[in-house]
Length: 249
Image 1 (tube, rainbow, N blue to C red):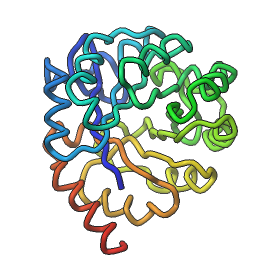
Image 2: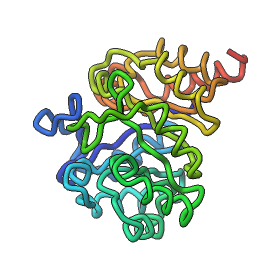
Image 3: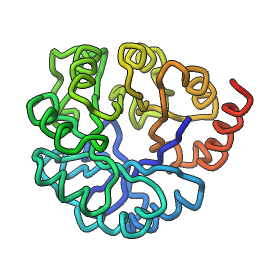
Image 4: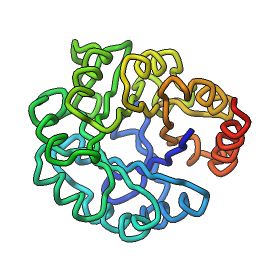
């Protein structure tokens, strides 16, 4: 089970939001590159970046901070980014800068043809982000709830050739209420590509549950508020996940 620290960027700072509300942001660092190095030093094997301003604006807004993070750790571990990615030129620029994966969320739902083109042009580098509440997909920084079923879209996007899916339960994100294991497993079992869980990770018991369902296609989990607020020790959690895998749990 891969634990992936999240670095959410707002106005060039590392923050965490409560249920996606830009007005409920807690600043954890004014130096995102230093925060990235911190997580690598703690044993992170991948980083998850979100351009929060970009997600709401529909275009990149934190490129300077993103480049600084890539320059700091991009040679050490894969870095993935979502938020405000709406065209192929932006994807190409980010990949040329050194990103390993680009996450397409709102644009994938609103313009599936764009996602299909991206998967064709940049095979192996495109991850789809599906944010959902009660099984329905949300877009535009979680501000709009659609009528699309998350499993239906996941299967459609898998056919396009996306690398993996990040599934966020937006009702739990930032609330420290635990991962929605059942919904995540249902999604993972409906597709053949890996699923990365997101939203609600809060304690070691969540890691145990995720390790139990790893064979169902749940490849990793995004770690956010819990590791910043001190509710969960990242290094200890990754060590526990590795130990469970070695023992076959």
